[in-house]
Length: 221
Image (tube, rainbow, N blue to C red; front, side, top):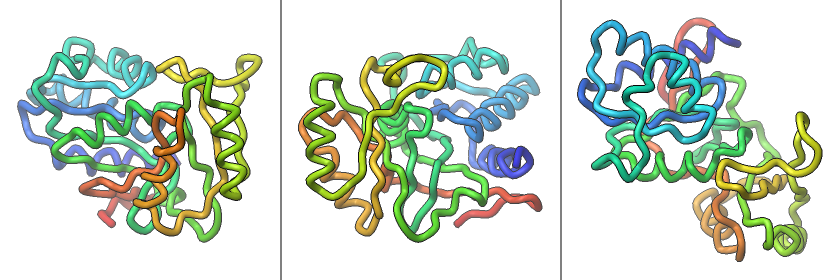
């Protein structure tokens, strides 16, 4: 599996140009990209700045020698390219949010001139329901759950495995997971975001490239 993730990350490096501001995604495949980007910078590749999408991606950037490039969104003129992973890749959409960083990931991805999704071939979505994460303010959580239930979705607040009680996002909010069959991704993305109290959901419909890694290499969908 590690080879598949690495192959996807390596392919994404081919689309970078020197002097760019780069958005750093979250998750295991994005971590592979950050590691390789650090190696590339160490070898002399020029980077203007990096905007991390989570505490996790910031930690990986520091670990792999990119700390001097780290910036917040208000410190850069724009983002040239964002590279991030995916929990599932479907026809015309990707699903993210397994690491509870979906809101910051979408902010960076949708504000980048180019958004590249990298994933291994196990993430290709099968028919049926997938888990869609929604970040919501704590006050709204009971109402969000009730609304999702009325829509026919099985939903629950995500709880921690290393802590008691709900997961708290980097934005200090709750994460609600809902099992949903995605048919019209763009409409569903907009509809979920219109539920009062929902900050963002994990359906992404705006991207420029999807790179899938396997044991032999990587390919664009």
